[in-house]
Image (cartoon, rainbow over all chains, first blue to last red; front, top):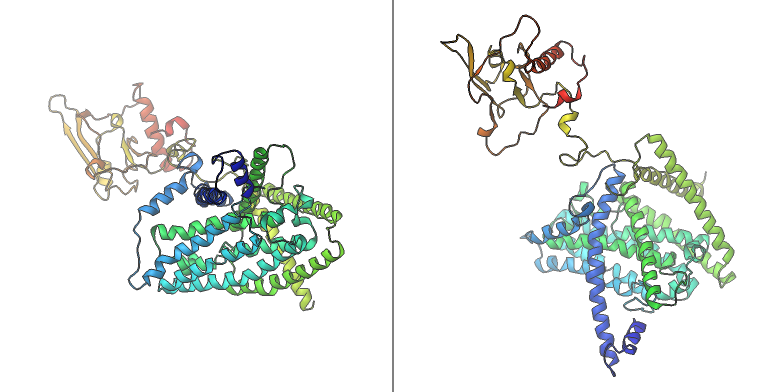
Amino acid sequence: METLVDNLIASGAFGAHPNYAVVAGVVEFVGGAVVFLVVAMPFAGIVSWLERRVWARIQSRVGPNRVGPQGFLQWLADGLKNICKEDLIPAEADAPLFKLAPYLVMLAFILPWSVMPFSSSLILADLNVGVLFFTAITALTVVGVLMAGWASNDKWSLIGGIRSAAQIVSYEIPAGLSIFPVVLMTGTLSMQGIIRAQGWAPQRWFLFANPFTFVAANILFISALAEGNRTPFDLPEAESELVAGFATEYSGMRYLFFFMAEWGNLFLIGALITTMFLGGWQCPHVSDNVVVMNLLELLIFNAKVLTVVFVSMWIRGTLPRVRIDQLMTVCWKYFVPLAFVNMIATALWVAIWPHGNPVTGYLMFAIGLIVLAMFVRRVAHYVRRSRMELYFHPTI
Amino acid sequence: MGALGSYLQNIKDTVTTIFEGMAVTASHFVRRPYTVQYPDRTPVRVQDTLPFRYRGILEVDLEICTGCLACERACPIDCIVIACEKDPKTRTMVISQFDIDIAKCMYCGLCSEPCPTGSIHHTTEFEGADYSLESLIRRFVKEPVLAYKPKKGPETDPRIAPILNRGMRYINEFAQPGGEKPVEEENEA
């Protein structure tokens, strides 16, 4: 952001002798508002539509395709409908806390956007503790969720809230420990610093840096899914058991806030994985024009994020919900020990090859391609076995 | 297999089963969805895909109605009302009223079984929604019409012959259900 401010002042957009603090403040404010209004909120809505379409295709259905082209404006219709609904507060509920909870959840969803590295200069605040800030703020969700569960004064809400709290607090640990190998290798917690330590080519991504970071990436992804209350870890809002979990008593826009945060969290999950392991906005140097490069980087970053988002939707369409004891088993008996092993092994790796081992990058990438090829073969096998009419268009 | 062995086996099982599961769901992305987007986005009208003897809303071909009242007597809930009179001058049977209350009809098909010409029959039409019960009463007789008199030989009138053929086919299918495959243009009611 500082480079952007410098460029703006140099180009004379704010007159001859501007006050640097004022210009920076204006740019930050406008930038923040734009990111929030133009990116964060619509993204949460569009994800809700995309998710429904993706599940539908997995279940051989069509999904919402009536509002706008291919149902693209479904999220606007849903939003309008929810705004028009009555904002109901139960008589026995703790009204102030009940009203406050959705905003806290929303806050935990909005604040991480300030350290979102969209491109080499499009970042609101490149904090030197960016990753820490990111994980700490997203964990704030637990306060809002627990507050909602408690203030609703309802068994379902309370159980949902407690489950969510247990889940988020537990999975914070493997998530944090999986970020650690990357921090060990880069020596920085800044989002931009971590991305700059990687390259645009896949063999220079941290995903393929060594076998342990590959495992760490997977643990981080699954833990992030659990923290975002996503299937297969959506126990806090298990419809068949808890109605809607902590959101049972909510209606109208407050109800929507919870779900907006949940869908928007998908972008945050994707952005975290992309930044840590998938090379972030790194893009080959094709132009000396700063604007063109930034746009390309923005495009690449968003494409990677959307890929991760798509995979998480795909997982949601595939896996059944786990039981609460299985949830805890996966976390404490498998992820935490594995994350510790990763951490120590990466520390040794860095001690042996302080600047990374380029051969491993190529090797890991090759293994990744082989696994992908095997996967495609399995998919082809199932497609053949189903003897179904094929339909390759994403739209219908 | 020791504790460590089963621990590693669990991890392997998890990874491989999720791998297979994801492959199954991925194969669905390239399959055509089953959904029939009724009513406005179907390749052909759903009514046209239904079998010939589908029991939809009742219809009467007055051209071949003999006015025998067999359907009225057969109806278990009296939703058919027919008025037949003999014209005193010409001494012919005239049908002056033929009403079917679709709101009462239970689509049992008992009326179309005794019909000698297949005049009263079910169509494949099933969209009967309307704003009032009265508008669901189908009044087939606009002005009194002559009742049909079956000929000795085959029907000679080129206007009535196809209607009668259709009606007889409808009746014959009582005797041999599914014996004759429906023809496309005759399906349209």
